[in-house]
Amino acid sequence: MICPSCGARVSDGALSCPRCHEPLDVTQKLSLSNATWCPGCGALVPSGESICPKCGTEVRPDSPAPSARRTRSLDLPSIGDTGVIPVGEEEETNVMTRIESAIPGADGSSTPTALGDRMPRTRSFALAAALAVAVVGGATLYITHPWDPDATSISAKTPADTSMQGFPGVVDSLSGQDDSGERVSAAEQVAQNMSAFYEELGELSARVDESEEDLRTTGVSGEKDARAAGLEGAQAIAIDISNLIDRMSGSFDDTSDWADDMGNLSTLGNWLRNRCDAIVEAWEVSAKSQDPAEDSAEIISEAARGRSFAALFSENYEDWRPSTD
Image 1: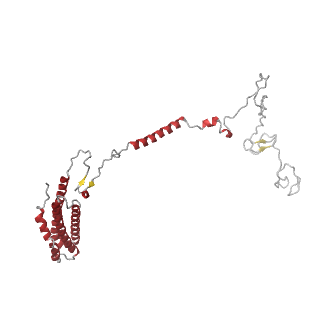
Image 2: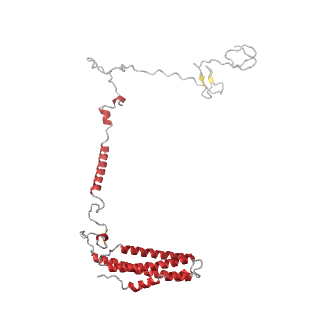
Image 3: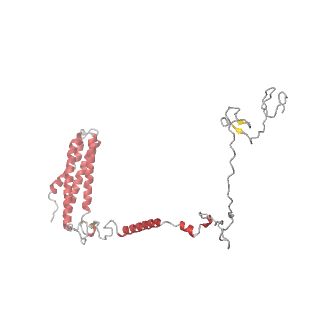
């Protein structure tokens, strides 16, 4: 080999020129068939050396190659052998039967074994049967035995208004129904209704008196909020009186035996309503007034228009008490 730097001849195994010490960047082909590797640093140790030239570690000689493993020749059948022993050769024992896979093939999904594997378990059948019995039985019980004991009852239990059929009052149940309560006759029902209307007229009259007394104090000297509250109270009383008159007129007819008593109650209601209307108008003047003390005369005069109705009501209220006979 020629050194590219100085041209000196260099041996093929040299890594640098012995003359100019120029490194030789040449790839060399080394035979590693008999090479030894240093167990300390892993460097390649030349053949025949017992000491690593790089780290100085003692290199152990190569261990002898293991002997070849002994094998036994067996007369095994080929893969294509069916495993059937020919006639006359039954004494031979070196013939293996064909081994089949335990996993069924993809094309065997319709075989009896595959169909049996896909069948539901007995526990699944039992659970499905129990659920079906529970659902069907529950639905049947709900339909045939409703929780409401009166669901299938055909008895009329809704109160019926019979005022338009010539029978005064309201019937809570039919006379043919079986009940343990005390039955009220038509005459007793009418008497009870008229007594209730009469007592309610007296209560409303007392409320009108209180509103008028409040008008003579708060209505002519009170604050604006107090006067507005007084007006709302008087208007509420007027509404209650009108509702009572409507209920009385719709409960009886003019041909009944209680027509006179009912006419007296209606007259008392009209007198009370006219008086209350005058009180409401007086409260309206008071609520709109900027100086109620200065406008007190006008306020009192509006309320005075209902005094005649108040007198008529007081004179006849006790005499017109409905008869319970």
